[in-house]
Length: 385
Image 1 (cartoon, rainbow, N blue to C red):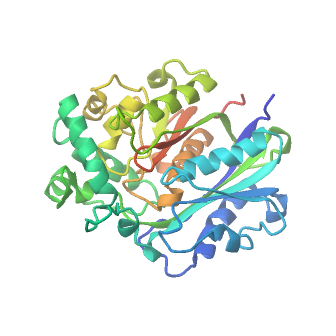
Image 2: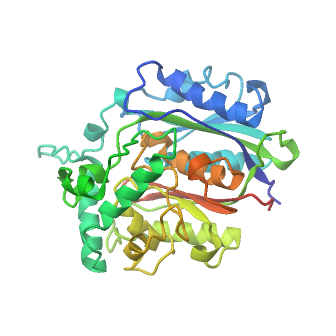
């Protein structure tokens, strides 16, 4: 029987466009120290460290986990590195949880980060087609056609993405760690912002952020005395599929649907819309909220946009989504998935402050990456499994 695993410490940096005051090592240590303080533990209480980040070519620092060992108190301890593109923060947390659930370690520190101010993600994400000039279209250039396909097949109103952006940026005003905090942002301001990759406007896309997130995971037998109750990990799941294959469904990917089914089945969830109190999901471009509502089984295919229109995904809706402001408001890529998992844990621990969902008992954390090919999810609850 697997050991029970709980989140007992959560830490993150303030996310911003540039953190010139710290190195990468300083950035990850800042998040880790806050997670340890939240868990009321010290470096010596940690048995292993699991690190995650997006591709090394972003910052041009190869195998950064090697030089981060000292900064993360990992010298002389097991240190693992995880990499699954943009979903890496989520899959890193899952690997860390599995070390506890397997009974290998009692307490594990997991950290994910990105320092985009020292990278060129647009260049790194541009497909280099042989014998052709690179168009430097980045992630937006890849995902915009998928959004247009969704709009065509669902009949979603053109302003759906604008409504998501306004909601998430309003939620970010309640999150002191969020990168984009603009109290003047309105529906008209989003609509009037420059079109970057039709139909994605400037204010409908994620920022480039520096930031890190850390979690302390503990077995039931090694639970520390903390100020807040633990968030119990009820289920985890990861699925992936190739970037391209014949007959691939890119708008509603099979790997995402399979991952959602697996994580719900493990947690005993039969009706996710009714049984999950809130969800923090990976939405780098606003239109991905309605698309993921369908992929995650919260809405029938073709009707995810109705949840946005009806206010169901608002902070006071029946299924609040991206209470923290989401990836649209903070995007240190390597950490973005872990921030989604951390927010789910914050909600069931009652630590989310102004963006706390009243009575949140069951929460979903979700991350995806690559060309909609890597998916990672977990369900956390305040109740012990």
